[in-house]
Amino acid sequence: MRPVLDAFLASTDARARIGFDPVEFPHRYTDARDIEVSALLAASLAYGRADLFRPKVDALLRRMGPSPAAFVRALDVSGAASLLSGFVYRFNVGTDVAVLLLGMGRALREHGSLEALFVQGLQARGTLHGALDAFTTTLRQVPMDALRAALGPERGLHHLLPSPLGTGAAKRLNLFLRWMVRGPDAVDFGIWKRVPPATLLIPLDTHIGRISQHLGLTRRKDLTWRTAEEVTASLRALDAADPVRYDFALCHYGMSGACPARPVPENCARCALLPTCRVGPRVVATATRRVRDATRRKSV
Image (cartoon, rainbow, N blue to C red; front, top):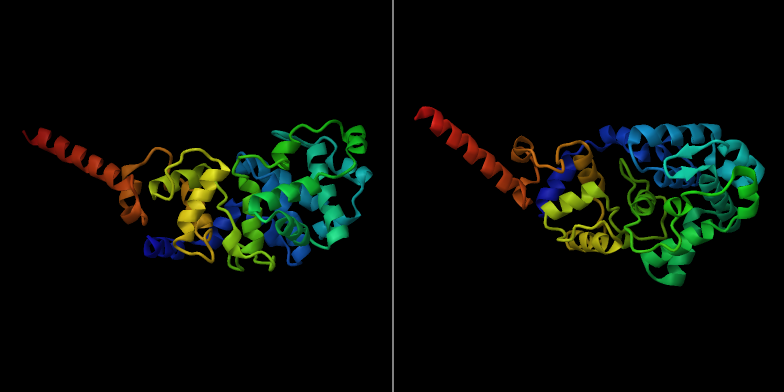
């Protein structure tokens, strides 16, 4: 499987796909602190349709000025209320995002970076799940009474910053970690040097879940942390040092429509992953047989 996946990865035009991915936002910046702050904001709001969340993230970052890190370092409840009054995106309202921004500002002031805060949790808990749980729990330690008075009650805070982390795949948090830890390359930044890429977990979503089943990386159909662990374990057998390096290419293959939920025979026939796929060959064979049978009936 590895030669097939490596060839597939090499054939993916990652730069062309960045514009369809929330990673486009941190790519606007060069300072490491600006990158991590904009990245966590973008990843946290990257759910639902891209054409809906991208304008929300873009508007916030533009209002935050040239340095998102400097903005959140100086942010207080009054500033958060000014920035986020009237903000709504699906499950989330201004208070939810204010918690995230104020939490990041506090982390930068007290720890110097989001990386340092995450590493503290990783060292204390010893697992990636525990580290992410500690990370989100600490970010949420902000003055809630004052925020509620200024912006109203929170609505989807647990969706934005889950604490406790629970059994879900935590796709957006693991996506943020992938951006920060692996690389640098055309997509990921590799600015967090104290976390090895080998510890990362695949950012599991519907596209990765479906393609992982097709490739035999998992038999599980749920989008849970356990399934993400199983997919990552399969990928770790291919590349122990960097198991999630195929994530961007595979995810965007699904996003592009090349590998839809309902297989398309024409797509399967020309798919670079066909030699290792458990679904595509059967789809192609069935379509070929139907065409052959139809041709025979016409000739009779």
